[in-house]
Figure 1 (spheres, rainbow, N blue to C red):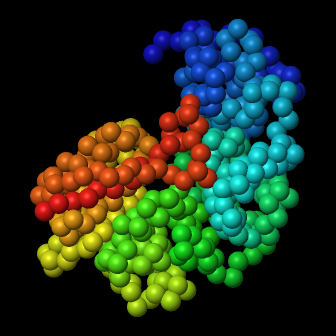
Figure 2: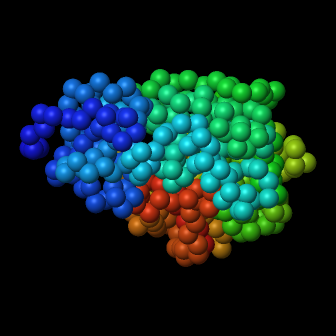
Length: 411
């Protein structure tokens, strides 16, 4: 790729006393003005001054004509070299600024939910790029997946305490996103303490969330509305919850009156938490668990002739990025092919994808192919997405990643 020559003079300080970084002439400054929050490495003039900016530090972003676009956080080690923090070029990104963003996020969640169990911050969609915060009553978990949040983690934790009143704050610094930012894995309790898993009431069920050793923040709030819809379909029936984690769909179905739930997951620790949740609901006698590879377990259930009134498959992201898309769609098709024969005639199959690289049409087509190859006919009765505590930034497709397809199967 041929780029315009780099300018020989770069201003050293912008309106807020910050270093200045500048877009290349061919970069889409209009998209950024209209709300797109990222600048990729090949869109920015990267000279020696830019390379010297510490990962996670702030700078003023200018277009090619040297007009300010706002304050960005810069990470020269990342493909997303700059993330928009504030369109005001004179904004000071400090603890008060963080508290204002958190207060705005909290106001939405308090309007949506009666109890303090929800996603409080959904990264760019809530104006805190690359940062996830989930709340569990008196505790909260921060995932600082961008270098700026890692750099400002103490200010972020204190602002979180000040705004929400939580007494325990956990940093869960692990996962693929941090690796892409050049950040090391690190998990620790920043404020307060924990004596064990936290009970989370949701959709009438009780879940146990391990805030320090579980996947992501310990629980997946994004599926809340889809748990509720599936639970209605499973009333009075037998449920199979594949890739169940801590029992998301299965326990919600039991709370709504399902007769029995079988939970399948590769993690023995997750299944133990699911069983603990069932005990807390006084429903342990209606739960069975199968620990192991989900594909193998579905094949085994098929060989046993098992049939269920509702089968749910909620796998991890098989296509986390575009290079993995083809392989991911084949995996989703295989899930559907193995799951479809396990559904009793007239029963329901729920297939989920959290891969933003696989859009709704591609995922729906892969699912339908798999159901057909599993020998079943289908009706698509509902399409679900993440709950409103996971708002979408319209300019950023990645913020709307979750799809849940609800099929009714014939013979």
